Image 1 (cartoon, rainbow, N blue to C red):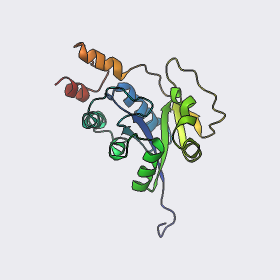
Image 2 (cartoon, one colour):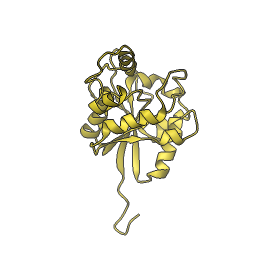
Image 3 (cartoon, rainbow, N blue to C red):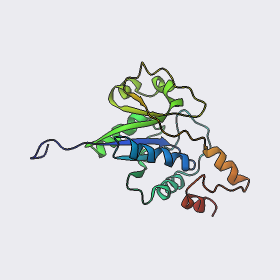
Length: 194
């Protein structure tokens, strides 16, 4: 409380990912949510290793974070968020939310996720608590039919653009010496082809 009343709460979207590397698809989604919804900002949360994707080969954490920082530089509504890199592993969304709420008590966080993740929500760590406490904005994914949302009253589908760009394709292109121009921001391309 302030002398004038309650402290204003801002809503911030959290777009989690390994960002291995960050690409134009991630940024278009983040910009969509930051400018076409009720969110004040979108934070791209760099994850060390998804508990559901163990075994994937990742670029070093510091490099992935640096690439996200380069990608969002100059955009005041987007931010690279490193908090998961300092939390115990494996990283669980509920623990990340608890840590973010502790650091940002006047911020309401909204999860941003692809439609392909919705069916797996009940298997997430502390899923019942997460689904009760947090709004979730879902974006469509190419080739993924939308799951029945009846069990998820706080899930809202947004008409974000559907993009079929994958970090795997970008990594393979780099390995083969092929162009990644326009698939990633110019600053990220310059960093990756050093």
